[in-house]
Length: 414
Image 1 (cartoon, rainbow, N blue to C red):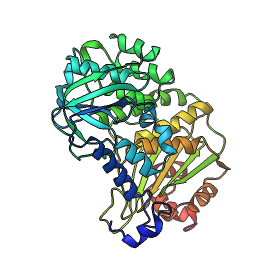
Image 2 (tube, rainbow, N blue to C red; image 1 turned 45 degrees about the vertical axis):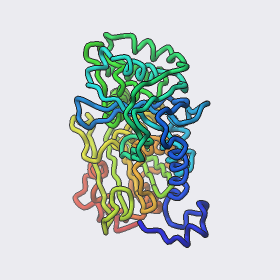
Image 3 (tube, rainbow, N blue to C red; image 1 turned 30 degrees about the vertical axis):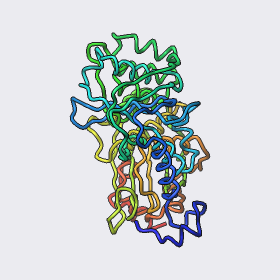
Image 4 (cartoon, helix red, strand yellow; image 1 turned 30 degrees about the horizontal axis):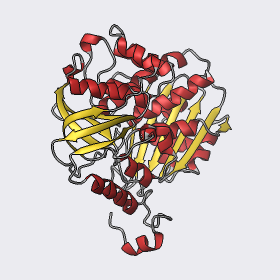
């Protein structure tokens, strides 16, 4: 996307005159400032939040990246998705790109009997707070960042020669207990941590560094895989509970509009059904060169699904959020979740964005309806794509109405 420089002069990062949901000038300047502060340096010392990234290229041999910003103090917000949600996008992006990574290549099975440097990385990942550490690199870091659909951004990297840890806050008791229990399988470990209040973001880090599961089967898990695995396994467990609850008694509609995104949820009085759909406008992250809006949708019935959804990790990030609120309500429902992404949103920043926004939406206000038609007419007032386009693709609405022509059932475009 080419931006008129005159707009930047008038805006100066305040008014989003370019139409983007973040200021690329500020994000780039802050990232460059961080990179300049470590240029030509082969030693990076700071307080890791803690933060670790596990790559997937070359699996079953992978790169493990402990990361730290070149600053000391309380850096925990760099690994706190709830804090990220309240930040300006350029602040979030630049702060995450300050995480300088050192890389060491190991086999995924090394998690079972880790060499010293991997053991130190695991200890860092288990920590209850920021870890004062130093990365001794083989050469200065390069300018390559991590911008990924699944994981949050990371800064540049260089091969790691040595990791030195100066202080290591002990892990929370429940994490230490699960880590020490080498007879506990990974699925049970994940649920135990979640049930004790450990957020899925932290659990996925523990899974990725090979800190969970039966001892002889522990292995490193690439970060993008671990994030989706935890979202899926926790939401599967939640679904097992939710299916035993009575149905809600009305249609509940939630709407959240934020930074060139609109999220919509309809909870319907029906046994569990679920769909997640995304409409990408031309110029948005995954429709940069397209000329038309692209709508993708995936779904499941009462018993869930066994295969991986074609729509990707956002499916499970949204699924866990809706099942969390149903569990808290002690009610069961069919769930319709739709998202529109507009041209100003054009950077991949991770599935946390979906999970935390859906959580925030479902913990907010909602409107009650006693007729699906009225609920859809209300939703149509917040969406840019005609409601008929959504309804014609919707699996859950097809089940709820059992009509052959859903657009006619709506009586045209509300």
